[in-house]
Image (cartoon, rainbow, N blue to C red):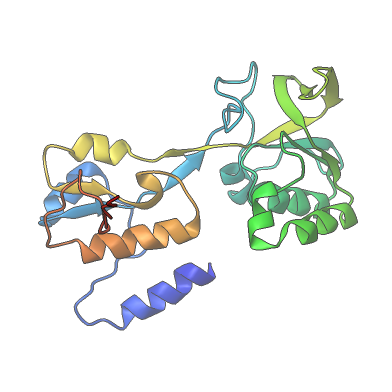
Length: 240
């Protein structure tokens, strides 16, 4: 939110930029707008089938809630019930969802294939603080476990070291991978000059989305060779 609001405030100061907030458009409306070039930054949605970094095919029976669902106000079941958050994203999202649901009274288990929760946050020096907050919130942590199957009010996790499969009660929230929202691009490509940027092109972190938008603006009136490298190479010739 802080990133979004800051950039919105900066853009609103520019007299040559028109902003239309909360104005979702379809392909026909985009064509009617008559823009010379179109950039689609329509984002991405979390998968609900368990596919992520370590699981390459949909998990049997998995039609889980996702972070998108949780942020839209949906909940696994009645407060006080058991819920397992399966994290194959390894960044901050699963821990945020776990802490939220625990604060609402759910009995939360966070299961991950990694050796610790939110393992990528070791690079940002946040991991130990995140894990402590989860423990303080009463979240049960299961590392080295992979989602194997989901049933009605039950799920099965595989210990990645021993191969042992254990069952757990409750529902599932899947925090695994995201898919680009590129339906508009598929309709518009070949009809108008259109380019995907940000998560619409390849889901990543917020910083990458900011970079993509900035890069699009810098390259707006230039012809980019897709095969060229964006840096200079220096070669040294050694003589004996």
